[in-house]
Length: 73
Length: 212
Image (cartoon, rainbow over all chains, first blue to last red; front, side, top):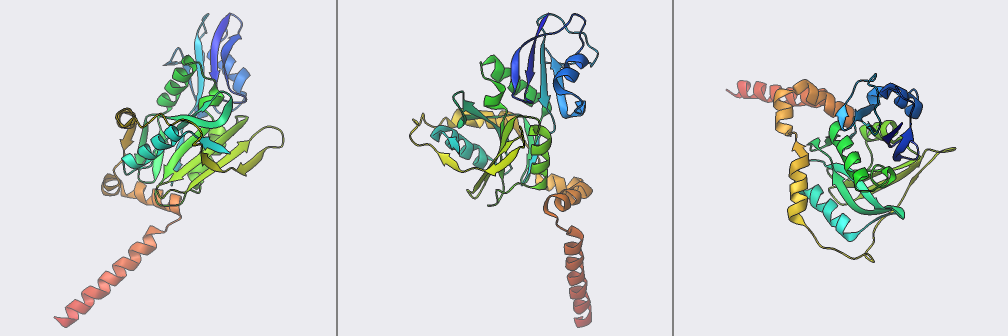
């Protein structure tokens, strides 16, 4: 099945990817981000916070975006 | 070279000067030139005069909105912009840590800082291959058409995204946090300064008692 993935790492990505039926959010995160700390990212499905074990459905939108962006002068 | 359209630059100056705090956002660039800034977008953020922190949810919202608008992540998620108080645009330790942690996994990214006094800093970080880091010049491209200022829209964007963290509140209610903040950010030993002040005050009081 296909899900839409939005990810800023690497070359940046916003496109549909093929994932196996029964794939979880964790599966996609591990495949696309590797072993980076999950706490460095906000992971949402269909613009909502999600559990790592949430099973993806056809057409879901997963976004993996950076967290804790702060600057100081 | 990091280029700004005249309109994007005008908006940046407006947002920098609208409040007394730092402010930050992401550059929106042209699809054919990823170092040409044609707009900038704020995300919801909590700011003080020398600090800015983005809301994670709002960053995710920006990514969703821009993708829906047909942009690629490299057009809106690679140039991190924020302002500094005073006239020093050089990145702080916090800036460097954020840039490495947040943008270190992208193929490339730019940290852009505009000081209130007008000086700017831009650094392009390449994270592929051997990697490279270089300062790049900043230019306003006046060959591009100036579409005019939209103060009403810019003001609305500022007011709906920027939450000012009043420095007076910081010092009145969270003294320990404030001291940690100052020491961490400015390597400034507040206790030494306070001790000097108290010593001078004590000596002055002793002199007053003596005179009485």
